[in-house]
Amino acid sequence: MIYEKLRTVQTADELLDQAFRRAVRSAMSGSGRVVNIQRAMIQATSDVLSDRLLRIVHDFPNFDELSPFYSELTDIIVGTDRLRMSLSSVHWAGDMVRSLARESLQKAKHDDPVRVRKAYYARISSIVHEVDGNLRFLNDARNKLRKLPDISDVPTIVVAGYPNVGKSSFVRRVTGAKPEIATYPFTTKGIYIGHFTHDGLRYQVVDTPGLLDRPLGDRNEIELQAITALNHVGDVVLLLIDPSEHCGYPLTAQTSMLHEIEKTLTIPVIVAANKCDLADFHGEWEYRISAETGDGVDDVMQRLIEVIDSRSRDLPQQTSEL
Image (cartoon, rainbow, N blue to C red; front, side, top):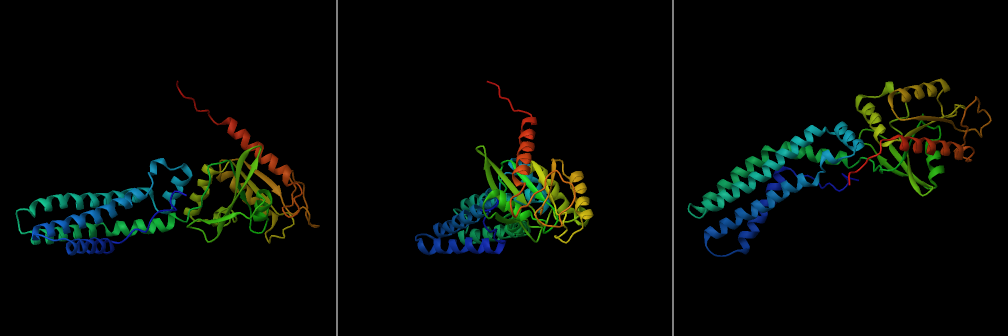
C-alpha cells in the first residue's frame, strides 16, 4: 500500500538532537585547526538535518498520481491541501538548512569559527522549530494513512448489508479462504478483502462493516464521503438481505438501506436474499442464496461478473497515436 512504508516523522527537538550529536562525533573524530573542526561540525549538522527533513518530503507519494479512491480518502482523513502545505514547509526548512550551511562554511574561513558555528546552530534551530507543527501534523497523518486498506486495482465487488446478514460468510464462500482484514482510520471495525479468479481474471470482494452496515442517515460527513469514495474502487455492489430477520433487523429497514445505497452510489446494485436454507425465509427474490450452504451463490456470482464485464465494455477505450 502506498502509505504502508511511511517512516515516523520526528519532532523538531528530535531532529536537532540527532544532528547536533552527529556534529559532536564529527568534531571528536577530527583533528587539526579549530576552523576545520567547526566547519566539520557545521557540515555534519547540515547533512543530517537537511537529509532527514527532505527524506520526510520524499517519503510521501505524489498526490497528483494517486488513484481517485486513495486521493479521496486521503483528503477525507487528513486533508490533501494541508498535507501539501506541511510538506512544502518542511522542504523549505531542509533547503534553508543547506543554504545557511554553505554561507556559514564560507564565513568560518574569515570570522571566528566558533561564533559562526553557534550562530548557525541558533538560526537552524529557529527554522526547524518553526515547522515543528508541520512535522507533528505529518506524523499524525502518517499514523492515520498507514491504516488505509490495501485495495487492489482489479474488478471489485463491494458487499453491503446490515450486520449479521451473512456478508463475511459470503466473502469467505466465494473467495475460498479467510479474507484479509484491514481498517479504515475513521471506523471501529475492519473491512474484509478477498480475491477469486474467473476465466483467468482476478476479482476482488470487499466487505465494509463500519461503512455500509447501517442507515446512511446515521453517518457523519466523513463516513458519507468515504462511502462515496467506494464509487472509485467498486464496480458493483452486492446488497445482502436477510428476509428471515434472524440478523435482528426488520426487512423494511433492510430494503430502506437498499434505496439509500442506490441513491448514494453511482455503481450498479444487485440484491440477493441470504439464508434461504432457513425455515422462516420468505418472499419472492430474484437471487435466493445461502452463504452457509452455497445454494444459489454461483448464480449471483455469475450475475455480478456479467455486470462488471458489461461496465468494462462500456468504458471509453483509450487509444494511442503511432
